[in-house]
Amino acid sequence: MRSRRLTSLLAASAATALLAACGGGEAELSAADEPLRVGASPVPHAEILRFVDENLAADAGLDLDIVEFTDYVQPNVALDDGSLDANYFQTIPYLEEQEASAGYDFTPLAPVHIEPLGIYSQSLTDLAALPDGATVAIPNDPTNAARALRLLEANGLITLADTGDAAPTSMDVQDNPKDLKISEVEAAQVPRSLADVDIAVINGNYAIEADLVPAEDALALESAEGNPNANLLVVRTGTEDDERIQQLEGLLHSAEVRQFIEDTYEGAVIPAF
Image (cartoon, rainbow, N blue to C red; front, side):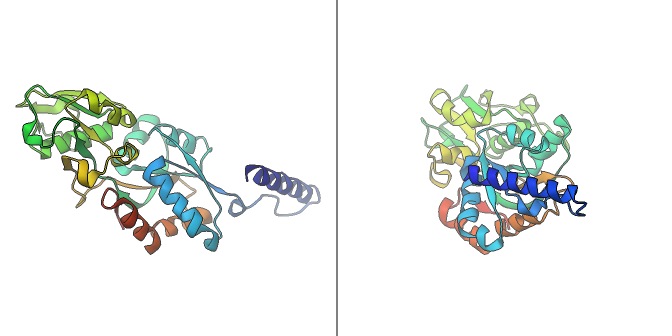
């Protein structure tokens, strides 16, 4: 497949060069003739994109090239340097933190789905049994750490200081009646820490990859109602009107994709449209 694409691109480049040499007015190959290269986390983002690619894209005239990433950093690096045309893995709060820290100039499109964070344990079946001095693993990136801390607070385990519009950090834990020991771990690695901690707060996509069923296995889940942490397609600012991006955006918000999400993930991933 890739070799055929490369051959096509070389042929197109040669034709373009010939047009330019002959004084042809339209020397630039239209972006619409290129595959749309989209970076995504394997689950559920790449799975949703593969559903689109296999069932909807051809009829829309869209050629998708899906690139999987197992971390939350490289998809934005690749989008910024032009290796990707779009990525699909992040939320608005995470995007805003990344833009502030790395200087990216990206544009988010419409929300597609929500993956509720959950509290999981290999040793407990009820949060009420959490012992004093228990160890807690949470994601270490600022956005997901804040979500995890708020989930702990919502379940009466800690109280956070008022941080206004700023995302809370572990330093903002004001009351900790059980003297919990909070350990921050790279988000993708949190499921692997389950055997070493009393509870762990795990992102929905990584929970699914670890064969956890959030609706059944989580001791507590984020509420989907009013949740600002929907996942969405993100592009470089100025490319949002690209015909291919608009085609993909429309397909991601189709009735077929909604049904696929509901049937496949059974509440672990929730449509946000």
